[in-house]
Length: 189
Image 1: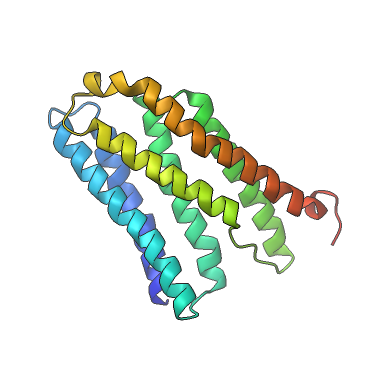
Image 2: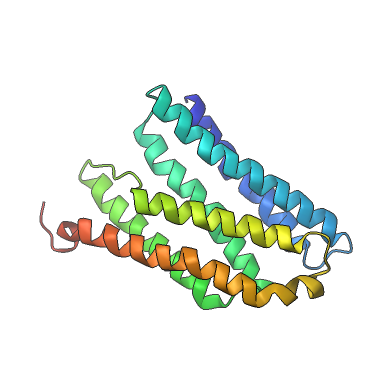
């Protein structure tokens, strides 16, 4: 396994403590410490996302495994945060449902392509979507630092409008991806 793929695997592993600390930050008496730890983990995970892509492109270490696992690691990290933000009542559930539905759709298309021996890497619009998702999640985590869960909820309107940006990109990139992959839906090879 090359270095970019190891960084991607690290991001997958980091999703577990990130989920734990973010979820516990809503109920624990040490909520600020847990939110800070979740924030730090998410920053580190986001950096591994940038770094694995940079190294893979610069040193021509792009692999089929990386093309599949990199977006999967991103999806797990982002969806985990969005689901917990719904639980914390930061965003409405439909926002995370839209993101999850798009990810299932794209994963399904990638599975069909893989069955035909093709690997579909993430497109530019999908990368913008992921970048805005990660930035919004970082801002939401940052705004919650040093606040009780009750105080952090006061930013709910800001959270909504911030999250609307990646949700729109999610819909747009999902549509673009589906149009490019329409031959899979129509049974054309």
